[in-house]
Image (cartoon, rainbow, N blue to C red):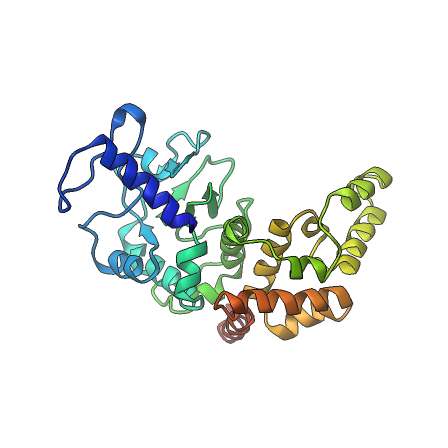
Length: 312
């Protein structure tokens, strides 16, 4: 059963067990056991919020009364944030919706419904001042996006300003944010996707033995260690040595590479120097095609528009 359906069933089942109401009534949760009613949109949503939800079964949220609404995802609570959440400025709502719509437009609706989080929560700021982030996940069900993006990586350095009054191509211009967002999304995708024997068979078998051996044999931070890890990835058919540990790690890295790069870029960086990566690439493409997503076409489009609308 699909993860989103399971989660929705859990919430609806718990609420129905705890309350008595007609079909047209709002489900009211029980504070005694901590079940909240803020995991699925109510009948009052409208505009872009409603439009995106009806199309993708994805709730793009911006409003909250208490920080706990943001920190508490379905079956996961951020116990470290401690209320450090600021609501998005009204002037940036339209550009935030446009960013999400642009991202989603390159992905089949069916894939989003099956393998994306249940909601995106867009806020102005999230997290401690000493640990800033432009995107993070809470469990498998929520992506938190800070908008507008103010960092050129996930360590708090400032980025060049992007004109949010002309934001049709913001998704393609802010390559840092796109990379961070897809790092989060691919991580969630990888936990929900079924493993593939064909993908594993195209390279070396998954396991931690190879990386553990390198960790023991080479000094931490040495060039020799880095070379050994790169050789493992190249010979084993992985994007990086981290992918050798499990299918989830492997497919996550392939998603991140494929959605943001053209075939020519992928070929030059990863395939030309690795027969096993070339074989695995073909299996990964087939895997996503079988799920209804031409993932390389998504990467081709991203690379084209990224280059056409590159910031000065």
